[in-house]
Image 1 (cartoon, rainbow, N blue to C red):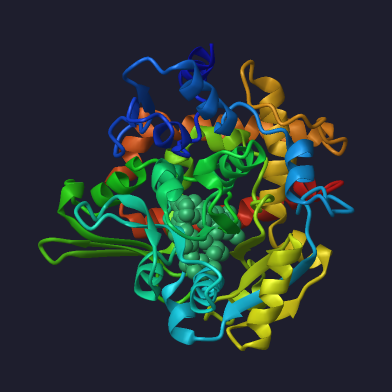
Image 2: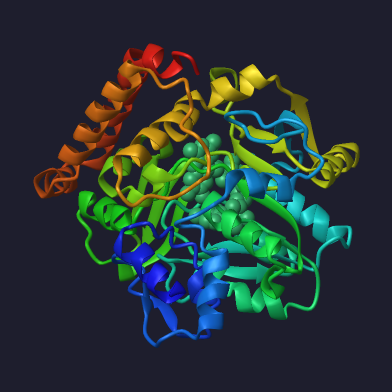
Amino acid sequence: MSQEKLQQVIDKGLCTRCGTCVGLSNGKITFEDKTGVYLPVIHTPLTDAEASRIWNGCSAKEVNWPELTKFCFPENRRVHPYLGVYRELNIGFATDFSVRRSAGSAGVITATLFYLLDTGQIDGAVVLGMDEKAPWQNKPFIATTREEILQSAQSKYTISSNNEILPEMERFPGRLAYVGLPCQVHSIRKLQAVNDPAVRNIVYIIAPYCGLNLHFSSVNSFLRAHGASDYTKITRLKFREGEWPGHMRVEMSDGRVMELKKFFANYLIPFHIMKRCWYCIDGSNEFADISVGDAWAPVYEERGKGFSIVVSRSEKGTKLLHKMKADGVIDLIPQTEAQAVKMHSHMFDNKKRGAFIRIARKRVHPEYHLPEPENIGFGRRVFESILQLIYALLRTRLMTWMVDKLPSEWVGRTFDRFKVFWKKRTYNIKRDKL
Ligand SMILES: Cc1cc2nc3c(=O)[nH]c(=O)nc-3n(C[C@H](O)[C@H](O)[C@H](O)COP(=O)(O)OP(=O)(O)OC[C@H]3O[C@@H](n4cnc5c(N)ncnc54)[C@H](O)[C@@H]3O)c2cc1C
């Protein structure tokens, strides 16, 4: 029965690729070509025990938000409609500039993992690095040294499957911190709720915000736009290289380097977004102990260097941040709720209203056990229809073919200008009742 449900999740496009099924399947499920469609394939029938264990941790079809909230934050008093449960909101950054510079936004995640390791609170951290043998592909692993943690710094904007290594986490002889995207964290928390042994070593979840993720085709498209075609010639791939917000940078075996500002590289989003992300309602990683996102506000963007919004949710996460600040590892500047929401208002609108509209329009969809928010007006629904139409047009073969023929710098700059215009024009619709 559960195996049928898993197959349905895959067939109906609900799979988040979090890797839980692969990790818990005893080798019976693997991912098909990660540079292609990237779907799990069930090769051998699962036993009932295997299938129900996987189903317990699968975040694709069902995440019972109210129950998981109670489980993760039993002491909680209030759930914020956009930010989830939180205790403190801060702008933060690593005080060690080399960490801050090497990281995705401000190095808070990396600095926190360093601190936990240095102070003996963990023995390892589940992180995502790049595969040494296939440097175009990301790869989850357990980092046990500062060097390994640093290797994993920076955001990887292609599909990742951190929970593939659940068996390693289960065997790991010590305490672990876990870093993962919201869909991956949902699975981890679901498994913790049923006391699954694979997650019993995890003592902290320190996790990034996530608006969406992209298929590997985005990297291929980037290469084609630069006149290259063979991704196996990539020797180094970074999505947030250099000064915040950073550059997408690809180095090839023949010495070629292709680089594009992060904001310009966002042009790849409409063409390569993983469709499942449209139905995800969690942008700020609501079940982590500490969540970290970019501080998208002009006052910080102007300064460069790297600033993050840091949301502490659990008591232990909050205490940890205080201790790190007292020990001079990170700096924290308190923020109001309004500031934290404004910084990501487009994402919150997309996750907390757009996703609910899309869910209501999809026959087989993820279940979150939450009512549709009341603040979705007629204008917002019409806007959603227009948005989906634009995305559908952009995803046609003709458009994807055309965009690969144009210089990425030009497409990126044009996309960025359009985005600024679009944000201004839709500001009122998106803010209305938010
Ligand atoms: C796919 C994706 C989408 C994101 N979308 C947004 C957004 O819309 N808005 C926003 O404000 N922030 C977003 N972020 C978060 C942002 O890019 C930074 O990761 C975050 O601010 C933490 O920065 P940092 O400098 O503290 O992290 P770092 O110190 O650089 O550490 C990053 C950690 O994240 C892990 N990691 C990186 N990529 C992945 C991945 N694909 N899957 C699982 N783990 C990963 C690494 O293992 C590393 O430990 C996104 C991140 C990712 C990976």
